[in-house]
Image (cartoon, rainbow, N blue to C red; front, side):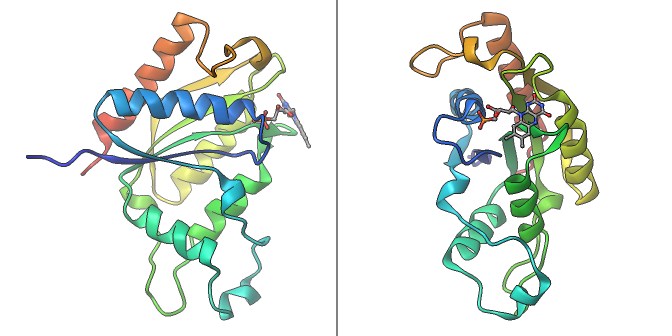
Length: 189
Ligand SMILES: Cc1cc2nc3c(=O)[nH]c(=O)nc-3n(C[C@H](O)[C@H](O)[C@H](O)COP(=O)(O)O)c2cc1C
C-alpha cells in the first residue's frame, strides 16, 4: 500500500488572528480530505533568532531541531503568507533561510529538493498579497523546490472567512482545492 504524502502547512505570520493562518488551515483540511497526512505548524511555536552565521557554531535550539526533523520527513509544503511592503514576510524568509543550511555535524541536510509547494496569500488589501507570492516563488525555486503553477491570493480577507474559519466563497474554495491537488499530484512519497 502506498503511503500518503506528508504535507507541512504553515503561515508566514505570527499573529494569532492571522488571515493567512485561516487560509492555510483551509488548504490543510483540503489536503487531508484528499488523503494526505498534514502537519499544521504555527511558526510562533518555533521561534528562531534572526539568522546569523555566527549562531551556526552554537548548538541548535530545540525549535530548530524540531523544524529540521519535520521538514526532513515532508514531501510537500502549503504556505500562506502576507506580503510586507510587496515582498516576502520576514518571519517566513528567516525560517526558510535557517532550514536552507546544513547542520554543522551533518545531522541535517536541507530538504527543499524533495518538496512540491503550493503558495497562497491573504490580505485586507485589494491585491491579496500577490506581489509577495512572486518573490516567495523565486526563493523556493532557487532552493530547489517545485512550486506548482497554481497560486491563490485572497484580497479583502476580512470577508473571505466565516466565524469558523471556513472559506465563504465556493469559487475561492475550489481554487484552494485545485492548488492542493497540484501539490499532491507532484509530491513524491
Ligand atoms: C510592515 C507591514 C507591511 C505591509 N505591507 C503590505 C503590502 O505590501 N501589501 C498588502 O496587501 N498588505 C500589507 N500589509 C498588511 C497585511 O497584509 C496585513 O497586516 C495582514 O493582515 C497580515 O497578514 P495576517 O493577517 O496573516 O497576519 C502590511 C503589514 C505590515 C505590518
